Image 1 (cartoon, rainbow, N blue to C red):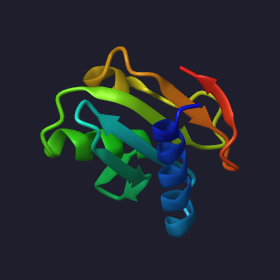
Image 2: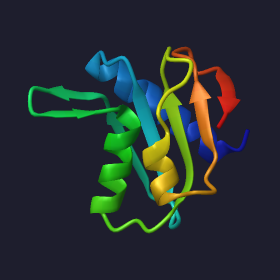
Image 3: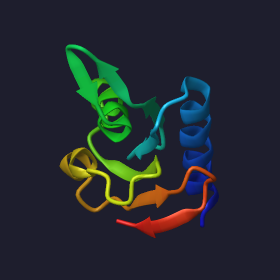
Length: 104
């Protein structure tokens, strides 16, 4: 794994732990900027961690994704938001301990 993807895993894991969330996600845009988020579960707004990270990237002007990471116990998370912004970007699915389970 390259160091930049390892950094995304570290960021996603730390945000998940800090917020006590079920999921943490981090994405890297085409310029190398990173965006990190956790699950949003409000009465009027529900987002997966990946949706929130992609939304942060888009609202900051990102036009494409280089990579994305989801740290979750879920075996098949929804990655459609990452595909919307970065159709070719690898999406790494990591266990809560940071172990890569697969690349989607």
